[in-house]
Amino acid sequence: MKNYEITPSFYVSEEYFKKYLGQTSYYLKLQDVTEKIIRLTHAQNVLELGSALGTTVGKFAAEFKTVHFTGVDIREDVVEQAKKTFSGLDNLEFKAADMCDYVKDSISDTDLIYLLYSFHHIEDPLERKVEFLETCHKNMKKGSFLFIIESFLPGPDSSAEDIDRLYEKRALEGYASTYWNSLNSIDEEGLALSKKVASVSFSEESKAGEMVVKRDTEYLVDFDWLVKACEDAGFEVVIAEPVNCICENAVLLRRR
Image 1 (cartoon, rainbow, N blue to C red):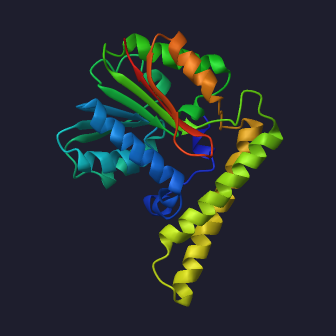
Image 2: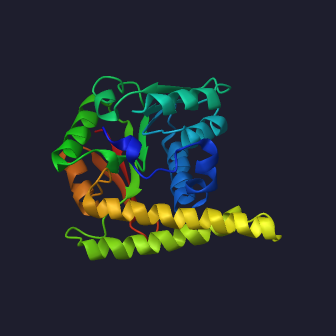
């Protein structure tokens, strides 16, 4: 978690987020799936770990006005910006903390904890992720839920070539979806802007792929490994399914 701020990030500003990551088909899909989980679990106290600028949790708080939301992120400057952006929402608060520390004593009243593109920022070795899951299970109340929706490695023994091929697909999907989602005009200026947005999205995904290979602030795991680790930690696995065809999956866990 210490080097999270240097991750090739779409979180430089709210505007940057909305132009790039906020318009990729895969981010929008993961957001939609998480929204559905909030509805189906009937959660009244929801926690996002790794909330960044609060774009996702802020959207949910505006939609689910009777639900209390908390966003936690390790970067104090980002948290302060989120507080200002969403100061008008009475059912939303932000806290600056390392999520691995936060779950040790601050989640006993939470109905649903979700991590959207955050679990992979827990640093190697894998035992740290195992410890995180075990700590969550220990401190969550019975019947509450943990939802991890995330990018994963192509397989248990993924080579650098396997990861490169995956991120080539991600970069192309990022380019295409941000181009069309950002296209608001077919005049010269509008077309140039969409091209720029799409090109930056392609570049950022390519950089992320390089960091996944190097395991440099991007510590992806195999999905089957995660499911087994969750079971070993004591969770009931309610859902373990793919979200799209670029190795993004979701696991919904219930505290027994």
